Length: 341
Image (cartoon, rainbow, N blue to C red; front, side, top):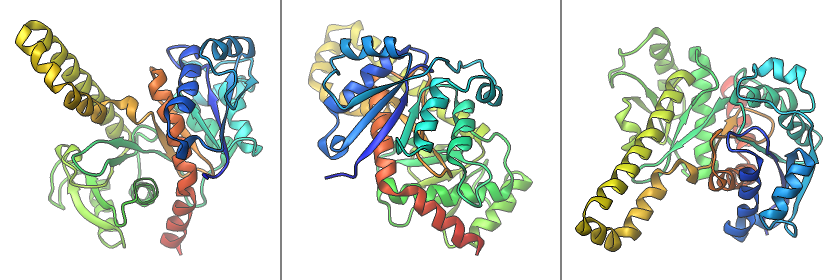
């Protein structure tokens, strides 16, 4: 039986409202396998009356789901540090406090990413030797998924911070995806060692002399080709790549749908290929991955998209369970300790 754990979920910060988040929480228990849901429970955080109604409507009254009231909400327009100070009873702050007190072992929010970073650092603290936690985004390939970090938490990074991202990404790839020796690459404008900025050239040297399975520089097209298991970049570049990929996936899916509607032969072809199309869409649908973990914290913090569907919330909660049970935080702690000793 899996380890017991409780996941706190911020239900108020997403773009689609609390009912979608609550529906995702109910889907977690109904759709995810017993290897994930056994011995798991959820705490929904937000307006108690609103969440009670939504939980009853979603058919989750008998599930291991409780509600923790919070009277305030961090919006997407709030400045992260100001929200932390001015809204101490926000759903995000209350959620983080539950993990700090040991009442939850993981947390998920589709709210303001900057505020989630701030509240996570405040409540959980950073792993010793990690000044900046990083967002780890997962991209599909023909083989193993590729982890790209940072995907938005740090827009301007020093070489030593990028090196730490590589260490954390390796630990994450090992723990969550079971890759024994993840191939690590540095995102750059060319494959040659001399390419890029002063910072990328500096971190190239650091990675080359490390014990990591460093593959050298990789260009953007190499991510989806699966040329590396871990790709390192700053948060500015990583976030642009992540959002671009998601929009391309939507464009391709929408275009296929429109083309299939144009002619009866296309519709007939779809009926024959729908299973394959369904499997293909699963690979590219960002909702399948649910959310991205913040690596480098003394705890589990998953950032979901603000526009997350119920399916995405379900998978973000499942991802938090996998992260906690994989012991990635302990792996990162050991990696950082070894690199600085």
